[in-house]
Structures are given as structure tokens and as C-alpha cells.
Image 1 (cartoon, rainbow, N blue to C red):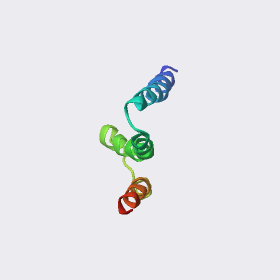
Image 2 (image 1 turned 60 degrees about the horizontal axis):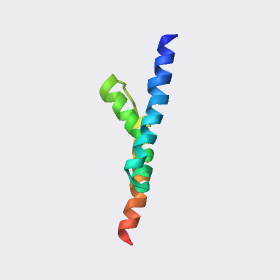
Image 3 (image 1 turned 180 degrees about the vertical axis):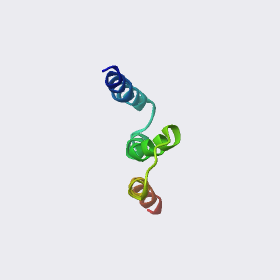
Length: 79
């Protein structure tokens, strides 16, 4: 009912609109990094704000996202 509508509006539509509105204020590189770390960041935020417990698999997934985000930047710095 109302809970689903609230989640749809504020959890997806509003978040998408605000994210896209913010893209005009950052560079393409910053937008890419922001989009890449969002899944890991959402897991961490859910643990901090909602007390969600995540295990080894989720922690490994967050680590993979962070490594995948940082590796191209590290390679650029070495050139």
C-alpha cells in the first residue's frame, strides 16, 4: 500500500532525479566514481543507519567494488 508507494517515490524516483541533477556540478570522472561506489556505499549506509547486518559475502562484494573503482585511478597515476 502506502509503504510501497513511499519507497518507490523517495527510494528510487527522487534519488534518481537528485543524482542526475547533481551530475551537472561534477566532472565525468567524478560521476563515474560516484556511480561505481554507490552499491558498496548503500550497503555500508544501511548497516550504519538501519542496523542491517551483512556477512562475509557482502563485505567481499563491497571490497570488490572499491578495488574496481580504485584500480583504474591507480593505473593512471603510474603513467
